[in-house]
Image 1 (cartoon, helix red, strand yellow):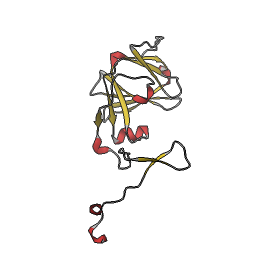
Image 2 (cartoon, rainbow, N blue to C red):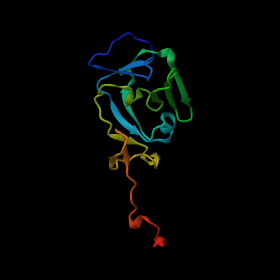
Image 3 (spheres, rainbow, N blue to C red):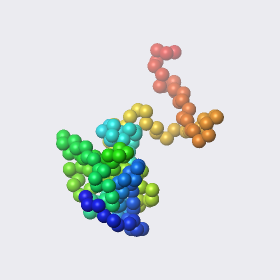
Image 4 (spheres, one colour):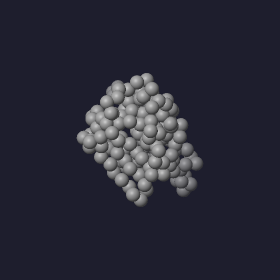
Length: 163
């Protein structure tokens, strides 16, 4: 990846790492967007789910920060993950099985990418603590904080010997 001094246009969508040392662009629209629920992605991101935007590699360009990119390679899985060496932001996820594609965390883009995340990968690996869209209520005394009320177990959910 070579550094380029090209500014974003409406045809290109700019993204960058948390500290801004690494900046890149993809051609609009992105190829796809998806939610990854896998255990391996969870360990790298620290989140229950990471949403990625996929782009053809030829529609991706690094604007600045090549020297700040670090790579972690998992030879067994054929996966390379790229990170900013300054702030630790995960910048890219690449698979040997798809050498013409690059996947970038959706949160690194401020603008619309032209695709909604409609796909869910590795749902069976979703952790039991992940939020599943339950009803939220305001937490009294903490403006802007919402919480999920504990679910009352239904009789059929309780062990039979409890009654």
